[in-house]
Structures are given as C-alpha cells and as structure tokens.
Image (cartoon, rainbow, N blue to C red; front, side, top):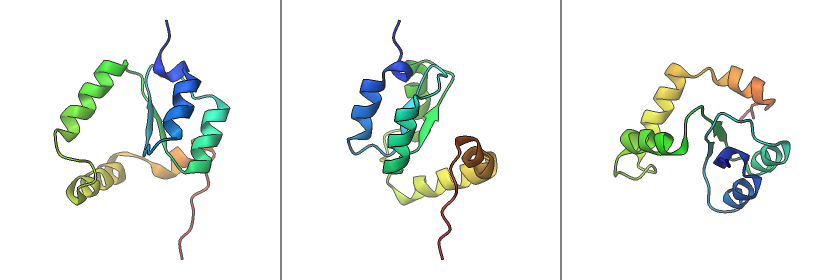
Length: 102
C-alpha cells in the first residue's frame, strides 16, 4: 500500500508548485532529498501519524471555508504555535538553525 508520505515523486512535484507547507501523512519520515529541497525552498514539512482523510478533515474543521491568508487566521496560527509548540526544539530536531533578523 502506498501512502503520500512514501511518494517522493509527489512530494517533489508539490514542492515545485506554490506550496506553503508539505504535510505528510502516515507518520513516515521524509527522504533526505525531500528535506533538502524543502529547506532550499524554505517550505516547512509536517509529518503526522494520521491517515490522509482524517488529516484533511481536521484541517478543514480548523480552517473552515475562510482562506488561510486572512490576517486573523495567520495571527491565530502564530498564537497557537507560540503556546503549544517548542519551536526551538523542533528546529533543533530538524537540524535547522534559526535565521536571525536584525
């Protein structure tokens, strides 16, 4: 059985579009070439331990019919990430050094 997380051809194709974030289902780690390309393009990757349908349903419930680019949603996501995600630990685990903006 093939899952989206083990389809490097689809992942690479997605990275070459206007993708803002690549979500991999099935809790598999992305291949090094995918990580490298995503890092080059500065596109984050999220790997989840859920099937694709469940993941899409959760995203749909979270964001509804309103476009993600709306400032209120961006602010909400930033607040949720700040409250519930250890960004420094995440970046460290991914081997990414934060960019310091002067």
